Image (cartoon, rainbow, N blue to C red; front, top):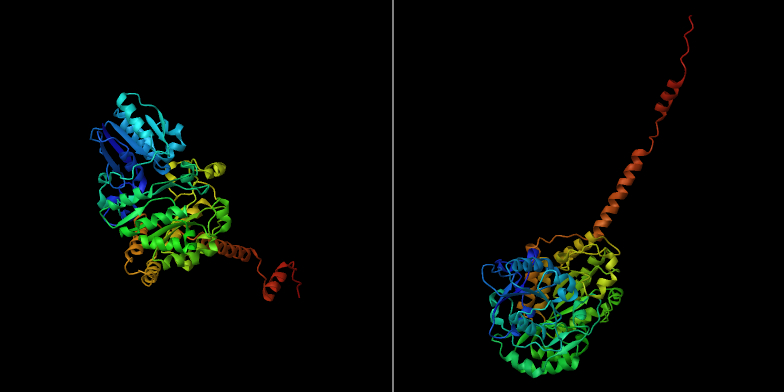
Length: 485
């Protein structure tokens, strides 16, 4: 069969990779879902992979089966693509996070749904397609391991920061209410054999690669053994990890010796009340400065993930967060709006407050619910404001200058440089403006008070002068007839 696998893109993301400048290449690296499906496909089938950020849909090419991976934000675009292929008589399969949590909805737009991980489900589906007995629903088995060696030749490597990625683990044991990873894997975590990982990394033809695990260091002993095993390879890499690694000098030391040059840490918020409300139990925000300093001493760039829109967040959260970011010294920041994705506990908890069910707005940049302490417009405006302010040229220059005096700062200078320039360029590419909601409220309040004073002043009667009072009194006296002399 000729199989077409599609990663759809919606809105301003579609075709972004075709632009010459600020085309998002720095943030494009994984394609894990479709490459995993391709790896599970028998060699007798012909596969083409399309990433809509960089590719066009090959409408004129004949295909026998279409598979589309669907995130919530790309669901409308996915359904549109599915409709067009089905009109041509081509069967369409939808899989990924959104169909897994919205099976009934997704089945209206596809011939079959793969719910959960593709392991076990995709090979069975292909057999049924060949036999003409395609079923409407297939459920994947997370215990069925996805091959480590993925067919990366299906990607145009010039369009990605790296096509060399490795997934040592899957899932996360944290129970954050906003996280779809927790819901997708039911809070479980799966680990690969370390020997297989070492062998896999040996096959990479470039020095740099990415661990795309959700939390590589969650199991300390496993992570330590992994880093000790890959240290002799001489690779450099980046990953996601918990900020708690700063409390473990041995683990950090082996991360550095194994080649780690950068970590993405989900700080989420500098409010302990906000973190507690989402059942996230990590290092209290007051310790972040020391944690970042410790990670820096081991030569690793720190990119912080932040979320705005918790019930404890008021209009002043953006300015106060920016001040904390400047103080603790993170090297890059990815900010988003709290988004209640279908399938998460947060979605059920916020169901009565959700006012926008346009799935294309569930891209972490829209406020799809009514915040507790500010308006939706303030939440979106504040998000753009902090992004624009954090990536002003003078702040970038200050961060890069600081990095040059870090351990191995000159050797790894390209890492924070590329990140900051890419985020700075995104502000131009997407026309980011925004405003500080707290400052706007203060200005509005000042203007309102000034207008009130002016209104009172205009309504207050004028006090007449003595001469005018005399003239008024005289004018009020009745005229007396003159007496003839």
